[in-house]
Length: 97
Image 1 (cartoon, rainbow, N blue to C red):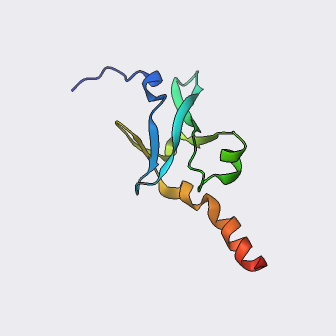
Image 2: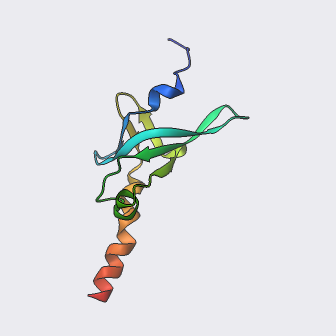
């Protein structure tokens, strides 16, 4: 087994998907805990506009906590919790309509 640590910069540019296959965004930067020498979050850009309408149209990104990451390979898989971000607005629209 190769114990060589993976270069954290290799995460930049990778696509991020929920664990059930929905595109979330692309890694633009990393949030680091320098003292603990650990990645604590992934800063995503090029967001899925259906999931993050306000942030995506405003040109802003989001930071996903690294604890949501399930696997890192050619793409990064995270918990599907991010897909529920839009639900409160959807429910609110139903109540207004």
